[in-house]
Length: 181
Image 1: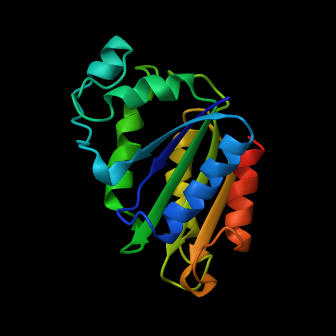
Image 2 (image 1 turned 180 degrees about the vertical axis):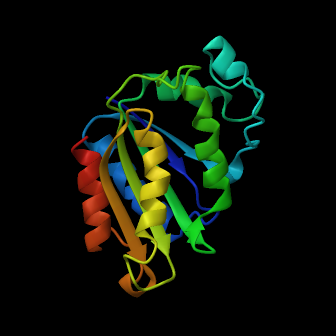
Protein backbone atom coordinates (compact mmCIF):
# COMPACT_ATOMS: atom_id res chain seq x y z
CA UNK A 1 0.00 0.00 0.00
CA UNK A 2 1.18 3.53 -0.79
CA UNK A 3 0.62 6.29 1.74
CA UNK A 4 1.15 10.04 1.41
CA UNK A 5 1.43 12.24 4.50
CA UNK A 6 1.10 16.02 4.43
CA UNK A 7 2.24 17.57 7.69
CA UNK A 8 0.88 21.09 7.94
CA UNK A 9 2.37 22.44 11.14
CA UNK A 10 5.38 24.74 11.10
CA UNK A 11 6.35 23.06 14.38
CA UNK A 12 8.10 19.77 13.68
CA UNK A 13 7.74 18.82 17.34
CA UNK A 14 4.17 20.08 17.82
CA UNK A 15 1.24 17.85 18.75
CA UNK A 16 -0.32 17.59 15.28
CA UNK A 17 3.07 16.69 13.79
CA UNK A 18 3.76 14.11 16.49
CA UNK A 19 0.36 12.51 15.93
CA UNK A 20 1.00 12.41 12.18
CA UNK A 21 4.40 10.83 12.67
CA UNK A 22 2.80 8.15 14.84
CA UNK A 23 0.34 7.38 12.04
CA UNK A 24 3.30 7.30 9.62
CA UNK A 25 5.19 4.96 11.96
CA UNK A 26 2.17 2.66 12.16
CA UNK A 27 1.86 2.59 8.38
CA UNK A 28 5.57 1.85 7.93
CA UNK A 29 5.50 -0.84 10.61
CA UNK A 30 2.66 -2.45 8.67
CA UNK A 31 4.93 -2.57 5.63
CA UNK A 32 3.42 0.32 3.69
CA UNK A 33 5.45 2.69 1.53
CA UNK A 34 5.09 6.20 2.96
CA UNK A 35 6.04 9.54 1.43
CA UNK A 36 6.09 12.44 3.91
CA UNK A 37 5.80 16.11 2.97
CA UNK A 38 6.33 19.01 5.38
CA UNK A 39 4.17 21.79 3.98
CA UNK A 40 6.04 24.53 5.85
CA UNK A 41 9.26 23.55 4.04
CA UNK A 42 7.58 23.70 0.63
CA UNK A 43 6.96 26.50 -1.83
CA UNK A 44 3.22 26.14 -2.41
CA UNK A 45 1.17 28.76 -4.22
CA UNK A 46 -2.55 29.22 -3.93
CA UNK A 47 -4.98 28.10 -6.63
CA UNK A 48 -5.09 30.71 -9.38
CA UNK A 49 -8.54 29.73 -10.62
CA UNK A 50 -7.14 29.56 -14.16
CA UNK A 51 -9.37 26.62 -15.12
CA UNK A 52 -6.63 24.80 -17.02
CA UNK A 53 -7.12 21.72 -14.86
CA UNK A 54 -10.88 21.66 -15.45
CA UNK A 55 -10.73 22.43 -19.17
CA UNK A 56 -8.04 19.86 -19.90
CA UNK A 57 -8.61 17.16 -17.25
CA UNK A 58 -5.10 17.53 -15.84
CA UNK A 59 -3.42 18.15 -12.52
CA UNK A 60 -2.56 21.68 -11.48
CA UNK A 61 -0.11 23.38 -13.84
CA UNK A 62 1.47 25.63 -11.22
CA UNK A 63 5.20 25.07 -11.07
CA UNK A 64 5.74 24.74 -7.33
CA UNK A 65 6.63 22.07 -4.80
CA UNK A 66 3.28 20.28 -5.14
CA UNK A 67 4.22 19.11 -8.65
CA UNK A 68 5.63 15.71 -7.50
CA UNK A 69 2.84 15.36 -4.92
CA UNK A 70 0.13 14.99 -7.57
CA UNK A 71 1.73 11.86 -9.00
CA UNK A 72 2.18 10.35 -5.54
CA UNK A 73 -1.44 11.12 -4.65
CA UNK A 74 -2.75 9.45 -7.81
CA UNK A 75 -0.90 6.28 -6.76
CA UNK A 76 -1.84 6.51 -3.07
CA UNK A 77 -4.14 4.25 -1.13
CA UNK A 78 -4.12 6.53 1.91
CA UNK A 79 -3.53 10.16 2.85
CA UNK A 80 -2.44 11.34 6.29
CA UNK A 81 -3.24 15.00 6.98
CA UNK A 82 -2.23 17.00 10.03
CA UNK A 83 -2.60 20.62 11.02
CA UNK A 84 -2.76 22.92 14.01
CA UNK A 85 -5.73 25.18 14.60
CA UNK A 86 -4.86 28.87 14.34
CA UNK A 87 -7.50 31.58 14.84
CA UNK A 88 -10.37 29.06 15.11
CA UNK A 89 -9.52 27.30 11.85
CA UNK A 90 -7.14 24.88 10.20
CA UNK A 91 -3.85 26.76 9.65
CA UNK A 92 -3.71 28.86 6.49
CA UNK A 93 -1.10 26.86 4.55
CA UNK A 94 -3.23 23.71 4.91
CA UNK A 95 -6.27 25.55 3.57
CA UNK A 96 -4.18 26.68 0.59
CA UNK A 97 -3.09 23.04 0.14
CA UNK A 98 -6.72 21.87 0.36
CA UNK A 99 -7.82 24.46 -2.22
CA UNK A 100 -5.22 23.18 -4.67
CA UNK A 101 -7.14 19.89 -4.87
CA UNK A 102 -9.62 21.79 -7.04
CA UNK A 103 -7.73 20.27 -9.97
CA UNK A 104 -8.91 16.81 -8.97
CA UNK A 105 -12.49 17.52 -10.05
CA UNK A 106 -13.21 17.65 -13.78
CA UNK A 107 -15.39 20.15 -15.63
CA UNK A 108 -18.44 17.98 -14.89
CA UNK A 109 -17.58 18.07 -11.15
CA UNK A 110 -16.58 14.41 -11.06
CA UNK A 111 -13.42 13.36 -9.18
CA UNK A 112 -10.31 12.76 -11.30
CA UNK A 113 -8.69 10.52 -8.72
CA UNK A 114 -9.38 6.91 -7.88
CA UNK A 115 -12.06 6.50 -5.21
CA UNK A 116 -11.51 5.05 -1.76
CA UNK A 117 -8.26 6.73 -0.69
CA UNK A 118 -8.35 6.45 3.10
CA UNK A 119 -7.80 9.67 5.03
CA UNK A 120 -6.42 9.98 8.55
CA UNK A 121 -6.90 13.56 9.75
CA UNK A 122 -5.03 14.83 12.81
CA UNK A 123 -5.52 18.24 14.36
CA UNK A 124 -4.28 20.13 17.43
CA UNK A 125 -5.90 23.08 19.13
CA UNK A 126 -5.28 25.28 22.16
CA UNK A 127 -8.90 25.33 23.24
CA UNK A 128 -9.62 22.60 25.77
CA UNK A 129 -13.06 21.77 24.35
CA UNK A 130 -12.43 18.97 21.83
CA UNK A 131 -15.78 19.62 20.12
CA UNK A 132 -15.29 23.40 19.81
CA UNK A 133 -13.93 23.32 16.25
CA UNK A 134 -15.14 19.90 15.12
CA UNK A 135 -17.31 21.50 12.43
CA UNK A 136 -14.18 23.19 11.04
CA UNK A 137 -12.30 19.90 10.91
CA UNK A 138 -15.24 18.13 9.28
CA UNK A 139 -15.47 20.96 6.72
CA UNK A 140 -11.77 20.52 5.90
CA UNK A 141 -11.99 16.75 5.57
CA UNK A 142 -15.23 17.02 3.54
CA UNK A 143 -13.27 18.63 0.70
CA UNK A 144 -11.30 15.40 0.36
CA UNK A 145 -14.45 13.30 0.76
CA UNK A 146 -15.94 15.29 -2.15
CA UNK A 147 -13.21 13.65 -4.23
CA UNK A 148 -14.44 10.22 -3.09
CA UNK A 149 -11.77 9.79 -0.42
CA UNK A 150 -12.93 8.10 2.79
CA UNK A 151 -12.19 9.33 6.30
CA UNK A 152 -10.73 6.50 8.36
CA UNK A 153 -10.11 8.55 11.50
CA UNK A 154 -10.25 12.13 12.71
CA UNK A 155 -8.24 12.83 15.86
CA UNK A 156 -8.12 16.10 17.78
CA UNK A 157 -5.49 16.95 20.39
CA UNK A 158 -6.42 19.70 22.87
CA UNK A 159 -4.10 21.65 25.12
CA UNK A 160 -5.25 19.71 28.21
CA UNK A 161 -4.18 16.42 26.61
CA UNK A 162 -0.54 17.20 27.41
CA UNK A 163 2.56 16.30 25.46
CA UNK A 164 2.19 13.73 22.71
CA UNK A 165 4.53 10.81 23.35
CA UNK A 166 4.27 7.34 21.80
CA UNK A 167 2.52 6.19 24.99
CA UNK A 168 -0.13 8.93 24.81
CA UNK A 169 -3.63 7.50 24.10
CA UNK A 170 -4.08 9.74 21.04
CA UNK A 171 -0.66 8.72 19.71
CA UNK A 172 -1.59 5.07 20.14
CA UNK A 173 -4.83 5.73 18.25
CA UNK A 174 -2.92 7.50 15.44
CA UNK A 175 -0.40 4.65 15.29
CA UNK A 176 -3.23 2.10 15.10
CA UNK A 177 -4.97 4.08 12.35
CA UNK A 178 -1.76 4.03 10.32
CA UNK A 179 -1.05 0.37 11.07
CA UNK A 180 -4.50 -0.75 9.96
CA UNK A 181 -4.63 1.06 6.63
